[in-house]
Every structure is written in structure tokens, then in C-alpha cells.
Length: 469
Image (cartoon, rainbow, N blue to C red; front, top):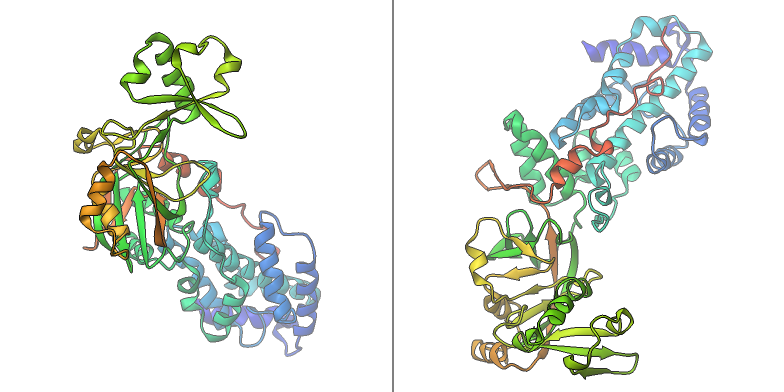
């Protein structure tokens, strides 16, 4: 019934009093004038550029009004209603207003020729704007991850949304959202769960679907994935876990950042270069109180200059001199008690975060494992070393074990870099139609749910509908 009434409306939108006069040229000109102006209310500049590009490739011809366009408009409205499949709200894309306008055949009959042309252009542009806004939200998300943590960056390459919409307009709109959504099977699995989940789970699922929109499409055929809330790291090949182990992550005061990097090097029997924040807050005060602290913990003091680093006798340090302290750094020697254990895995990043062994093995038995200063501690570092060096035949199990216990630092370059993704998913599809879930240890679910770009309803129309009759 709605489509039949819509047929009446769009024909009326293109002609005075439902007559036979073709107003497509006038509607085309009106669309060109609309999209040349500043963005409509509550439309982002990115979306508006997409709208302009969509119409530019069509020579500004209408897409949703005019002769034969009612079926396309009905398909577009159906697509807007599918926002809920992606954890989004159709009304945020003015689906209800556009539907009302589409079905308002009586109001359309009362308009003058000029009003009908302007109304047609507005309806067409607003439908396109709604679709491209939804497409952008499904593809890239509504929230900037930096609003949750400034270090968190969106890594997905934006798809060509106007081109994808143009293609779907020609071939069928039903598959358009599937063409632009994240490609990861976990996203599709969460979609299925969302379609039948309990109301209490819907928000958590939607929040985690949003985070998949920030992930790169290509995680790497072989990659490591550390999920902070689950306290686990998996080695995955072609999307399937081939190794899984427990990890320790950063505390709520020293959170582990969410980012991706490429593992390039293993360091056996590593030195631990004490981070400046730990040196200032813990190591230096302890050394000042206890003359034997540094020797007991195998820590050297270094005076660092542009040309060299010289080991300093602790007894000759003026611990009360701030200027002298600024020239010093601390380094723990390799050994069984080294804070990094017997091996660390480097994937260069600006946060100085890496994966490493630890002498504090008892922590892995705890259900909540947020105890580090930000790096990721591994339950089975030797197994990971074997895994990442499996394509270097000279590094057999015996040689790896010897290098870990040698007490002499040794750097080994990987044959091929391995992508490492540190992620934050509190919900994960479990493969049986449901989800596994974990506590929101850093409060990111709460912060994301209350971020204005997620929870605020978009301004209602004026902009997205035709003038009231």
C-alpha cells in the first residue's frame, strides 16, 4: 500500500496537479543549487562531500523522485530501516520523516509547480544524505575512538561510499550496506546475534560492532591479537586461532593503549630500560632510601649524553640534585629476575609497548590480570618465540631455550614482520550463535555509550522532508 501511494506522490512531485508535464530538468537544477550550498543542518562536511560527488556523477539528476523512481525510493526507505541490523537507530537517519513524506500524496496534490519542484529536490537530496550518512556510520562508525582514549585511532580505509551507492542504485540497494560494512566475520556474526539477542545485550553488542569499524580490513593472513578485556592473546592464521595464551595487561592507572604494529624483532635475555615515569616515581626514590637497592635488583645507573652512555657508581650520585637526576637513566641487567623475563617481542610504536616474559608467573592464575605498567606480559613466551621463528630453521627449540637463558642480550630479526593488534572487545561471537563477554575493565564501554556522537539523536528534519502542506 505504501508503495502504491508513493507512486502517486513521486509522480506528483514531478508534475503540477499530477499532470503530465515533466519537471525533471527543473528538479535537476534545484538539486544542483541545493548541493552547491553549505551543508544542511546536522550534516557533516564528509557526508556533504559524498552527497555532492554522488550527484556530480549523475549530472545532478534526481535518484529517488520522478517517473519510475517510486520503487527506488521504497527500497531506500527499507534500507534505512535496516540500520537496526548494525546496532543503529533508523530514526537517526530520518527514516520516519522520509517515510511520512513519501506517503503524503494529499499534501503533494496541493503544491504549486514551483513548490513541487523544490519539494522534489529536497526529498531527493535528503534521501541521498540519509543513505550516505547511514553508509558512513556503518562503514566507519559514529564515534571517534580518540574521544574514548586519545591514543586510540581509527585504522579502516574509508570505502568509496558515493560510488558504492551509485552502483547499488543501478543494480539493487539491498546489498549496499553489506558492501560497505566491515569485512571481518566477527562483525557479521555479531549482526546475527543482534538480530535475536536479549535487550540487555543489544547495547554491548552495538558498542563492540562500532569498534570493528575502526579496525583495518586486512589484519594480516598471520597475525597476533591481544584482547585487553579477555586478558588473552591469540595467534591467528586466516582468521582462525592457532595459539592462545593468557596475558597480563596495564592497570587502570597505566592502561595498555589500543593500536596496531608490526612485530619485527625478538630480543633474548633482554635488558630492561626502566621507563622514565617508573624511574622517577619508583626506582630513584628506592635507590635514595636504600644504598643496596640497585645491586640487589641488578640495576645499573647510566649517565646518558648525545655521544655515549656511561655506567655511574651509585655512591657518587647526588640523589637530591634534580639537575643531575635528569642526566641519569636506569637499566636492569638480563637474568631470572629481570622485569621482562627472558625474552621480549618488539613491534615499534610510539608508546614503547611490547610483549614480554615476566618472572611474576603467579599473576596468570588470577581471573583479572590488569597489573602491568602498559606492556603485555605473556604466559607462554617460549611458545610464542617458537611460533614467530618457525620459518627460521636455525632457531630450533634448543637454541631458543639457550638464548633465553644466556644472560647476554641478543636481537633476532624476524624473516617476515607479523602484524600485532591490541584491541578492546568486551563482546566476542562464540561460534555457537551467542557471545562471550568480559568486564569493561577500563570503562571504555561506559565512556563510548555516553559519548554524544553515539547517544545523541540527530536533529530532526525541516532539512529532511518537504514543507508541511
